[in-house]
Image (cartoon, rainbow, N blue to C red; front, side, top):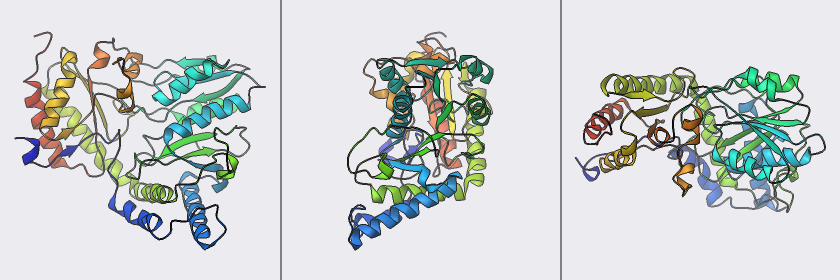
Length: 391
């Protein structure tokens, strides 16, 4: 059956999510009649300014923070860059050492590579075979010149959740700033900034059924940070640029919808995830799960199949022909023209060949049990069309 004759199945929600129609409805007034610049003093501008501040207060309530601790940005990438570079340069007099996990998103790792050219020293924390960091190892790396620890809440490829509360406690005891990229976990699992002792937190909109092009950075009151953008002084002087009013409204509406049904949706997705994992592992020879077996996102499945690593792209194309969208890893990493193996899968112990051979299946709000059943049927039949290296 071809993709033209059947309903498509989108199982790549870790890359981006479809916008919820309720989000679009909330945005439309700010794309049409309420189009003012929030820095303008007339009534059009005041409507826009009020919208931003109302959204800021709502988001602050969701995160258990103060509204003046939130900066709206253009993306998770911008928020992560502002967190790392901003803290590094503002606190250079204290030290020049930064610690990140070895499985961070490319925007964190590439920001660190750039900081290394500016005189900063970066420690890349190892992870175990499940992708989890060891808090005792972290303690050993923190020194008098350490400025910041950045560890993502949930990995975008393998879905492993990190013990943020334990990490935050260590950082607080050592008087070191703690940042986390929670773009993949926000709206899917509970997140409490105060409980986790976070000083900085990155979120974005398009992973929670909101619009692309908008994110947020929580900056705890008292954290010393230098802005990346200089201009009109918007966002408390931390992020100069005319605000994306419609995007911010959509982002906060998306967050409201996710958090309003978080517990039920987490249970529903976890059940679908576990059914998919169990069926694949029980029915496909040499199949294995990448990431933690229990401490993982409710919507993430990352599967490797021994002997099929060289056929991953062909498998994705066969699935696409049937109208099924999955991925071979991070969508952002696909911009790497070197076709290098996943740094995440290599960090958990896979060799470079194996690290090119995983399939990431990420479920979402609109995923159904019927779609799971159809996916499994087509996935199994597609595997049989491949040419394993070892028989």
